[in-house]
Length: 385
Image 1 (cartoon, rainbow, N blue to C red):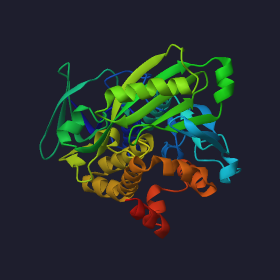
Image 2: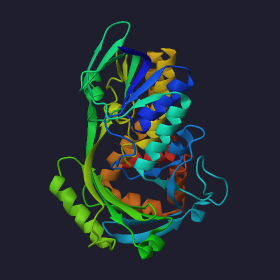
Image 3: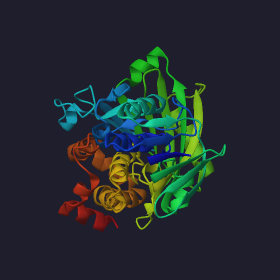
């Protein structure tokens, strides 16, 4: 039976960030991934500043586009467009970005995850593909991991990074207080569409409470999607159809057509069970308003890997609580207000201050909890309920 210091379950951004950090710290590290890289993954694929800053050193980001222009609509109407320059962004390169004016860097997840996988391997981790975990058992000194084919491994620490619907989140007992349904199509882009959308994204604040839609360009592919609270499946499907039509992309046969649930943890939810930690989506780490998760996956994974290598499991819990929980709490407050007054958010975003705040958030220069710490913002949210 093979013995390891750290076993990571899941080969997405959280798991590979964990593996890179643990292996870099000298821990014998194994990643168990049920699929095989490169593999398609439903995801908007937008890297904001905190994501770029958290990518392991030496990883070349496989960028498909750099966004410096954004269009916003409210239910397909009240359209306005803003540029990076109008937010005062004209110099200085975002971490990991090759574009000095980029607000968001667009990647395809199959390419991005493969780059992270190669980085973990270079750091000394081993990756086992097509390895599905079926059981975990633990005692005070080690954890036993059993695969579907019966093969077994032991580790001092296991980090679960297999998604919010994966095995480890159930094992640890993660609870969620926000579940949303995201629907997405990947559309092949003609040369004309590539020129039209290059460097340009669109966000529509949707008709359902807390919903929005997006168009993200990725070179010869456009990612078009919508997200809304779970339990409104037919309405969310209708929103996607209407949104695709209103942005002029009807009639294009999708290369991929998929849906997924995003889950945001309850603040009291556990982050470990004995020697088993959870990170990324498996822990329910997600920005509640935008539903952005890659930056939380990379950051929580790096913290988990370092803590697992050092054997400081309580330190993992305290560190992610200190660094990630405040921004999630702020995002929850923003979502609650947005659900009630989406039109007001649209109007505020149109102002120079609103756009500059949004752009600075995307570039990682400003966190939502820092915005909500300002007295005038706290007063405004209180007035809005």
